[in-house]
Length: 61
Image (cartoon, rainbow, N blue to C red; front, side, top):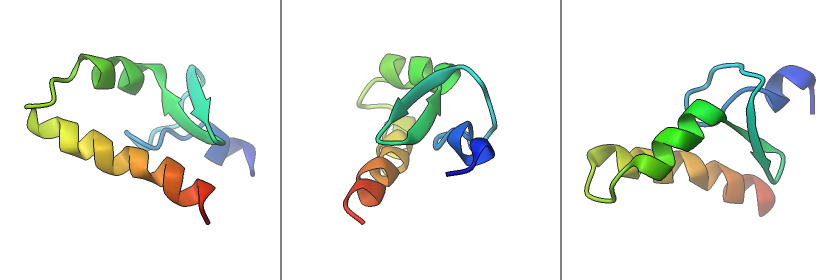
């Protein structure tokens, strides 16, 4: 994987340096914080679920 893709957040699609990697997919610390604070009743919760599916789709490919 190239360096830019490694640091592009799968949630916000921005290149950032601070965050976590799960199965070689990057989530920036801003999005991580927002995800853990989002209530399951919030409409944005489904957006986060959809973006997180990229981790498992890539893993099972």
